[in-house]
Length: 482
Image 1 (cartoon, helix red, strand yellow):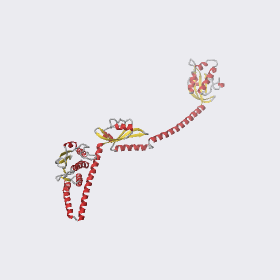
Image 2 (cartoon, one colour):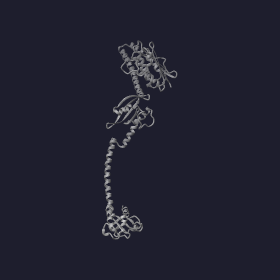
Image 3 (cartoon, helix red, strand yellow):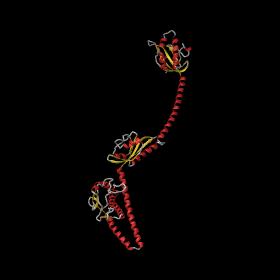
Image 4 (cartoon, rainbow, N blue to C red):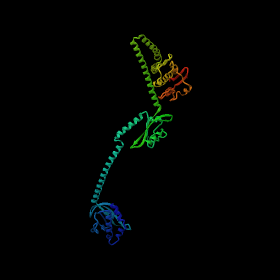
């Protein structure tokens, strides 16, 4: 700064012209003092080529020789520089600039100085101000950090970063472990999350994050939940030839809807599960019926023995034994598959309880079934066909239901015959339609034969129906062994 002030003063025309007057200090002294006071310099000393002062803060020094011994570079070489020297006011840093006349000759110099003591004091003052400002900045930073940390902890519910990372990993593991499809959208309808089962169910490849849900999933219910905030539960919709059950739940942030989470599953899987549970329940009831029937017979036999009616007891035992031996001979000796054995034994007990004749044709023969013919499908097929036959002969004077099976050839054949009233041609056309039934009652009906057809188709088989009012109805199922 001292050097810049000295340069500015050395180029001033007033200063240069004053050197040509008889008393240069008369013009230079007041001008130099004014500049010194304006700039805050400790002194502005202007001297001629001989070093005689034309200005000085102490007016008594005007006309005397300049001190410091550092003027030669400016007066002789014409250099602009900064020097450190001790003058009449004490040690100082000085900016030195030569003064040139119009012909380019050096006619004097300008020396602008700041006392080292003042510079140090000024540095100290600035340092103190800087330290105070830094202290307050530090305090504000600490307060800001505390407030920011509180706000962040509020948003993260007080969880530490490692806890958040753990929850994120657990969430991903859970989302991809569940069998249901799950997706989430934000308030603008962009997908924020979709698990792998959802992609598989919707036939989607690759990442869908930040893509619009429209076109990837039936979005009507999602947008309705976004608009109303009311959950949509167990809604059924058709999407790409699939029946999907959807549940939609809104996401809230301080009473504001910020998105929707939807879970969905293929209805076919749910129906299969329900059917399997229903058939297992029916299988259990058949076994209970068998147990109940034989318990009743044991009570009768016990009563006869207590009354001393031994002949009647023996006759009863022989009659039951003859029937059981005949049936058991076929069931256990000719039908080797334990799954079919278990189903038939249950149905024999149920037939006995219903007081109708259920006969297993003596010519039946069956080896162990291949693994793809599962117990659940066999229960659906044989259980429904035999139960329907039992219902078909209800009210008939001599109710008879026959079961025949064979595995000769490349197919396993099951045949169920009843002597009921038969099925009309109009009914045959609707027989396997889901929900169709000719039976009366308040309970949901019309799913048994539809489930049978699905189970047969699943194993690559076919089912045939023959019926008339005179001989009854015959259901025949052909299941390929391979």
